[in-house]
Amino acid sequence: MSRTLLAIPAYGSPELTDAVLRDLVRDEPLPRDDLRVVVVDNAGDYVLPGWAAGVELVRTGENLRWIGTAGWAFERARRDGDGVVLLLNNDTRLSRGFTPALVAALDDPGVAVAAACYDDFWLHQRAVRVPSDAESYVPRAVVRDVPFCDGTAIAFSMKAVAEVGGMDVEAFPHHGYGADVDWALRARRAGWRVAVTEAAYVHHLRRVTMTRVGRTAEDNRAEILTGLDARWGDAWRPLAGFGPGAFPAHNTGSALDWYADPAWVLSLLETDDAP
Image (cartoon, rainbow, N blue to C red; front, side, top):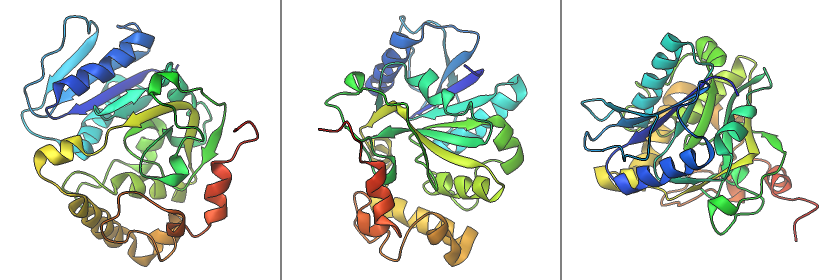
């Protein structure tokens, strides 16, 4: 596995951070020469449990939010010579063998960023089979090329970051909603590929931190639309694979009518071995 910095942005909810760390140490005894796990404690109140040997705790002194944690991780990885940065929300649960399976999607030198399949917002990133719990997920040796992927559990090639640059904090100043879409579009414009791997799966509890800091789904929708409109004008929707029906108010997930090519989305979720 490429030398990887795995950064977990955390803001309160220590029981969730504990749970995702247990998933990681279950599969990846730490410390390891090719994997560093860092909890970026944005609230300043997390205490590493005694069983989490080899996990580093960084207290930032402020809430960097997701987008600031990404910038912190990119700079740390650049300084220390890591080849991959993996950003992982703390309100997630992981399939077995999660980290090497996700990082392996970057073995193709043309892939800039890869995400795990999941049970969450974007249809084009959904698992073909959503399991009852993440640990029972059955991996599939399938990598999808996609227009962009979700920042919930996402791995970046540092070679691509060096070329594409970091996240745009000015365009996405609150939490970073939409910054993952923007970064993927910039990477594709530079000739890189964006991927989702079905070898790794994440269950996402959704909006735990956002509820804690008082942001609503409509706040996050506004950040996405305002930031992407500022960066790309009207061009970002077709580049991201969307039609005019995307992002209606009060949405809780994407739908087929969001996409310019619904048949393509359906094809991603079909498999010959599905029951």
